[in-house]
Length: 72
Image 1 (cartoon, helix red, strand yellow):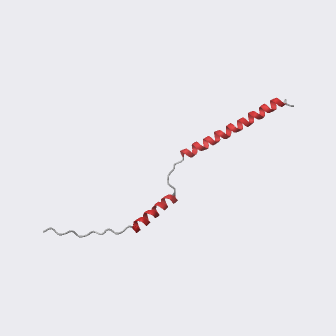
Image 2 (cartoon, rainbow, N blue to C red):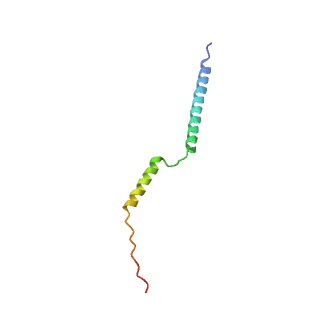
Image 3 (cartoon, rainbow, N blue to C red):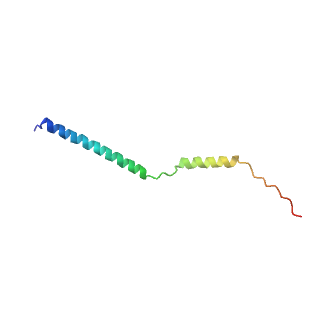
């Protein structure tokens, strides 16, 4: 069965339009899925923060308490 040329191009246009609509829907779904994912800190982030705290603590000067004068 041979379809008329005009009908063939109409079907091709509908197929391409449907494919683009599907691709857009999938892209929006992926974006929505990524937006729902928690944005917590990774293990490497926490490890880096702990290393920074350790270095800052080690580098800080020791606190010296001077004895006060005794009361008469």
